[in-house]
Length: 438
Image (tube, rainbow, N blue to C red; front, side, top):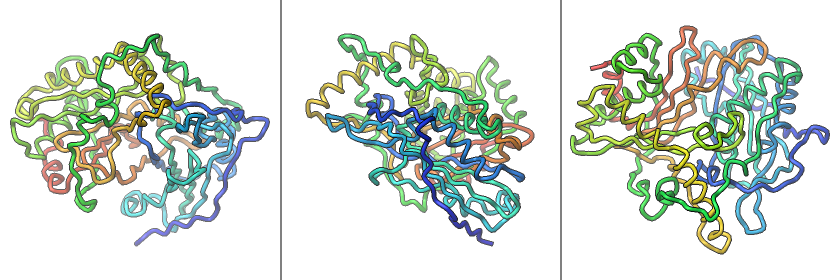
């Protein structure tokens, strides 16, 4: 039976004058912000009942947002006409909704059919659009789903993890516990004088004339299929044993998924395939940036192998390729990227073309490549609004073939969930082989 989701209330919550910290300042986007997706990223979490009241959730949200002024701000233009943050404390949008079903039944049967009704549909082209939007959906059983949509140029996944846990703590403790994050974006982009970029950032992190992103084709949306795989802790332990050396859960699972997706795609042995791996740069920069920095500080590694080598190599060899590529995103590379941003800023302010991120558009097919993001460091267990951690993370439909996201499972027995998108012609083969370690 179809689930009906009805919006019952829409409110823009603004921090009080006493708590607001934006001060009306205009803050430039950093080069890390400009390299990130210019669009809204949804996230959806579910809790079985009982759950906090909507008023308690909104009060905690207001208290937390006041400490994260970028979330309550808006985009604007600076004196040179470039996009910037306006920390005007204009507030966040909150939608309240009801769903005419039991949450447990929806999770077991048909939540995917109405997942896109569980988070706000923000429009990045609409003037004055809030940068952070929330939907609180109550199910008939008392279960709660919180869906959010945050503009990616405001914050990366690490930052949003910090914010979500702060919001949960505010609700759980009646705002007695309110951390103050590090929000000084200028501290993450201190360029050398003069700037001395040493890598081709215009074509790596941005869509320059020779960027590889120009080569990807587009499929009709009905050919793109979202799917999920659950890897229990025992399976992960087996993978690590196959590697035979110390490796992270992410490294061994990525090596496994890369092998299996490549096999399912039936690529030519002479083809090359790479994975675009998101790398958190906070601890890699010198000096390091605080882990609670709120903003964007992600770059990408590109482990690359020939198909025949990938499929025939041991897990240890593939993990080594991944590890070596990630290691190249070091302080020298990060400083070069920061210098590139400073050098480009002057040219753009003098009338040059704006930088365009390599973020893919709906329907893009990354095959023979992949793009992966890891939320394995996301503190799901801290998303406790007073009644326990979430019972499920619900991935919205992703419109780009070749996207993979690793998420810590909310299942009682732990493990890791892989949410991914493939051409529907490759799905059945992937399902048949995804748990084989051959």
